Image: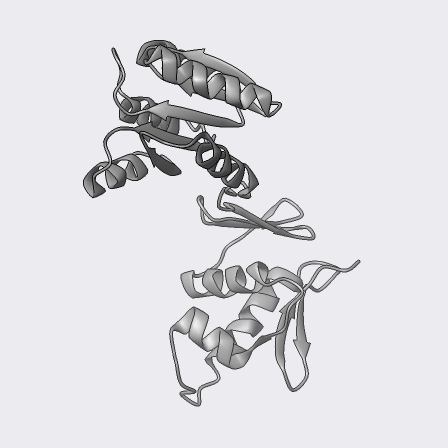
Length: 225
């Protein structure tokens, strides 16, 4: 792995770098916050080890800046500031773990290996697609085969729920809870009515239906294979 270490104490920086390199990692060192920020924002790393107290730009400032710029590289804060408030501040700034000096290199390595095993955070979906049907959650628009489909707010929410669970059967009760926030059956045909309206807009003008009734179970939105 390629690891950036931002540490102003030369002895500590050398100790960390030597240990990481002995374990097969490539290490870049920065002795000031400014130099470290330049590398952290401009280069690609698998992990970063950042001291809290640095000259020119402190560790919190570095992490806040790179997180604001969209850099998601896992960060381990390494510092003599071991109070609860200090740890909370580091994590709130965007750090992923916190190790207090003095430390054992074996623990540092174990924590870095644990961070490396974490799955990357996935960006939230802003566009849903099922076959030729597309929903933009930001613009609040729906299109099929490039043609815009005008939906009422509740219709949009119902279709969104079906698209998020494409290929799955959504029961009437599930739809009442997810779309209408009913946690009981009010004995209404509101689901059936809105499904009928959706079909008229999403399916009827097109050759292939996407909304299917699963007899005795509920509804499913699924594109043909």
